[in-house]
Length: 158
Image (tube, rainbow, N blue to C red; front, side, top):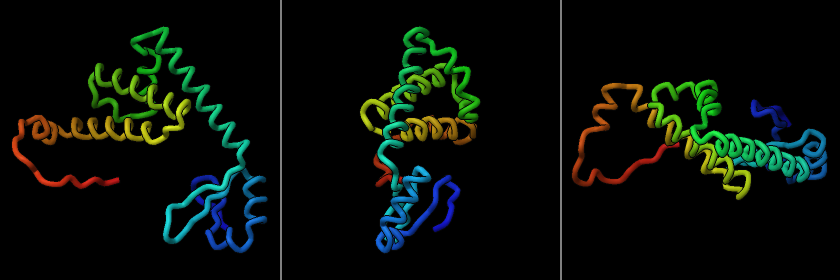
């Protein structure tokens, strides 16, 4: 067993198979254990009560952000904080920054209330890609040119 940079002890799937009780006890004591598998994505072994607490924490934060937006439709406080969390938003217009903020809060709400976690990362990745294009004037000019025809299959990178 080793310690990873993700703040959790790491064990192999073989360790879990050979000594599940020891791995489970360690996960209960430490909060979670990352289980690596040579032929599959890693996963975490986490105590259910800890995961429930994480869900409650996310729901509380999400509801707080939604309440802020409800009382201030411009989301001024959140918009002001965004550059500290996402420095690349300096490449977005004011309207884009507000749109990103609202989309992010909605995605966080979906994560908290509906257990849809992927949307939050998709929103961040989409707006970050927009900022990346806008940060390079030559790419931005090229991206704004009209296109026609089929450019073939799209390759998606992570």
